[in-house]
Length: 324
Image 1 (cartoon, rainbow, N blue to C red):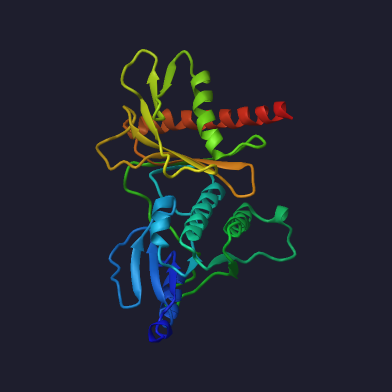
Image 2 (cartoon, rainbow, N blue to C red):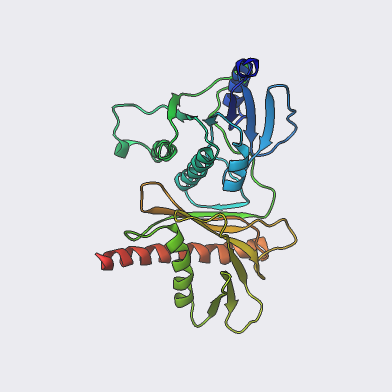
């Protein structure tokens, strides 16, 4: 009984190093134990009621680990600050994938409630009249609320901490110093299809459109190798991550290839994440470190990837029309 009476609920506080996060942590640790989460651990020191944790919320594995043991979670994350040397994609799509992975991790850890700190949205304004930024905030709220966890949304204006000037909500840290790439695009799935289907269909489609210049092989253990037609060494080797994949979340690890820089720590992956209650799917490359010189990569391989994704999205839309 004494142990129950002395139990302090645990709150996972994202954006803990920002102004709002610091203020909330000061107030909440009076009655709660805090998992203080930021993108990098930095020089923060643990205390009796605060444990610091570094987390990249673009990684489900990181998110699941960071929220472990939390009773409640405060969502103070957005994608407005760069998190890779090269980022391709809109902030709306990046916000959507952050919210989706966070909600999945919260559900996995049996979090009892999510408190989402959003921004002021006039109640009389219809969604279609709201700016892109605020529409993104509303989509984040919808995604967080799509799982079996109660969500409380707080609409906050500009915040002034006791020791600083006005500052917007912050949840991600400074730009990565690695030569890494994050590329995120949104596609629309045909009726009745899911992320697992589109991951495998993408490889089949890519094999068809790149002939005769590219050949693609897939082994029985679902390792995909992409070659220039006349070469023996693969440009890229993609390994299907069966343990992490599901009908709505499917992933390849970028495991090897001549286009991969193996001199740096490499955790590259190609992921397909279907948004809840939707035919929309986010296709994302995370933590990919190219081997090409950076200037050449930016104006060749990076632009080619964007063209391929646009062509694939157009193909899926045509596929949807023909299936009706």
